[in-house]
Length: 525
Image 1 (cartoon, rainbow, N blue to C red):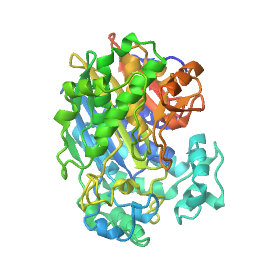
Image 2: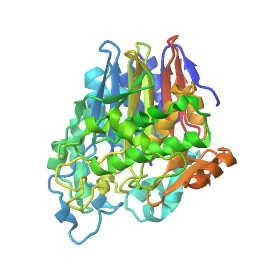
Image 3: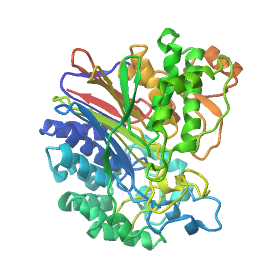
Image 4: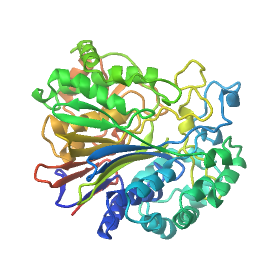
């Protein structure tokens, strides 16, 4: 699809069409954007299980029309209170997979409860109905899930419980086969019937912790019982007449703001879109933001992050002056990840921009007993270097890649956007928002246009600038001459992430875009 779906009253976008449909169903039943967002989130935990799940984290930006204010909810978990660097004595780093990578309490279920209690109309039981049905009765497995299962077959096949779910009978299901998750359905039903607390201090929590303990987990019942997410104010910065809003640390959202602050010095809208200069300036601005991020991003309760300085326009001008028009800088971000981003706007004008993740695809790979719940491996992002800002400490939130975004103009909500893709998130967000603001593209056009991702994708240390095959060969060659290590990938390559966006037009219509690189859909009415 080349142009955005247009709705006059409401819009749902997500990386899986069944999740988008679930959100739309909740809106049709009288739910608002917050109810629909939780329905989408829980459905993604079922139909996009390689990317997200109940064992992961989530970040939420909410806009309540009557309040005319954006609020954030940090649904990320902390490391266990008995977890420290001493837990990994003799090891150089925390493993990426296995039970020792599952060091943080999952925050997503708490996020559902918080958003619904604050703004929802419907009960948790009502909004979880679509997710429970897909887990219990099955759904047609996506090609995306099949591809990631094939990619990770070697280690998944060796994980007890997990292999039984994702490779039943020792085989990878084919795309379109019915995929049933009976234990996950039971866990969702328990949450629907008993509420949030069963996941953190009730019967389900006991099952989760028991299943993890049997595999040598460092997390305890006390760690789960003490978990609470928190409401927070977003951080923001202006860009060419818009105010851009992001989650504060421990999210990397400020990198997206820094990149735009730098780009504002170059009059991006006067460049030819898709030119070598356009791509070069975006990449170099993002690199500058990454360099600063890598020095400071962690749990702000453990380290004072100088956001005022980082987001200062004068500092941005200084960084812009350091960008050479014909030379690529050398720097290297840390490892990336995979996630799921979605957004909802209802007919009252309420909106939610949210993103959730297991960190790597299939997270730690550890399923907690017979709950059907895979635990995230976000804890593997901690450093074991005591001098590192993101060093592992008890009760700490890690550096987080998740960063949902919103943009307002003259105080009115205009754009809701975000993307899957770890390190690629600020990169894809910057491409999408500049295309919409500076070049007047609608959300689908902005998402469809050829994209890039610089640096590492998880497990692969690289300084490469990956560009999609639809980019003009002359542009790719010009980037090489500028010193970029250009690597041409598929024309629509999943490594670019799966982005979604909604724009509220001046006429009050809703334009929605979903990424053709994934299995998503924009559903408007």
